Length: 472
Image (cartoon, rainbow, N blue to C red; front, side, top):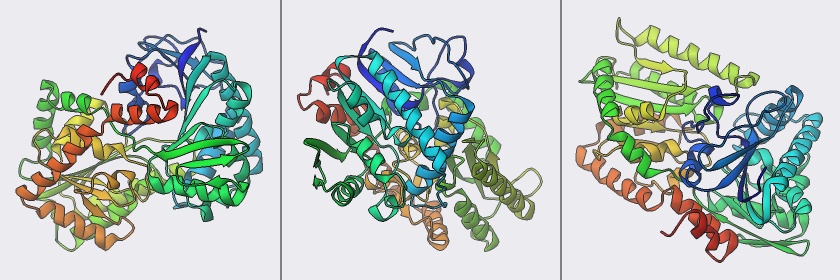
């Protein structure tokens, strides 16, 4: 394979699941997903993407997606179970999300995680040109930066953590905490969604490694690693264009008709994950119905739960609990032809999401913990009409930027109920003022601004950002 001057390394290749083995390859997009975030940057940029194609066993040679070359990393069934379902998503994921579900530690998972990370590092070293920039993504690959530096000390290595990075008292629970920390610090620049995460990393480097550490630089082993917050964003132009497409506009009208023209519509779009606060949201909505604050004749909730990690037992249990609760609520409060909740456990296209966003009178984004949550930003971008209200969790990274949303503590069901009612009952002037401020912010801080800020900090000269992103 030809070598590239920009290499992205992520757990998954950005492939549509149905196109991974043959046929034309297309970008794999999910609400708030990594490939969606990087799509606008890489669709016209010569680069190589290293990742798993989602299949078990040897991977075939895959065609390019536009200007992006694909370098698959093969996983066996045992590796998928130990590296992905095990250490990444049963150990790191819950612990990094404030342990809202108890992390599971199994020693054999670590060896698989380490060996798979080594394979990713070797693949990146193979495809990276001399002095190339390699951008490693997220918690699945925390060991890759150091491994890659040992293989290719000439490279410029960036690491970005898309999920929250926990405070020391949680991270210290990890049996392999020092190796994970050293792995991240193999990068030249470690980026996070929020400043608190960089502070957490500095505290850990001091405590575990005896490093000289501040919130923006860590010196250890004769190297200085820069750190900082770079809040990820969305392709605002793409979402705005989708929102005004004739077929999407027609779909919005149809949805409003199907849901009831006179009804107030609440919409939630989440991956099916225990960090998203779906069960808390359903409890709050059930109590609003019970107390008569909302009624099926005038209000409806649309809950989209995109399937996720269906092989992991805790996720299957979550799906069963949510489906059971939706059934109970509809059974108790719904009427013939008028459910209290429309529940959709299926993937949605970008156009369908744009239509849903515009159908919402209130968009409810209430994760218990989230690195950023791009659904909130997509909703704001899609509302060309300047209408609609956003109820947003204080514990989503997006809350630091979208402070004009109706912010809520999703752990507090009473607060959630009151905030939903505030948003439902807000006047049009209040909603419009809040939406205008949020739309202005995301227009100035879109996905290209995020990438430009990160890549400029990575190489300090601005050449890397100008080459791959262009001038502002």
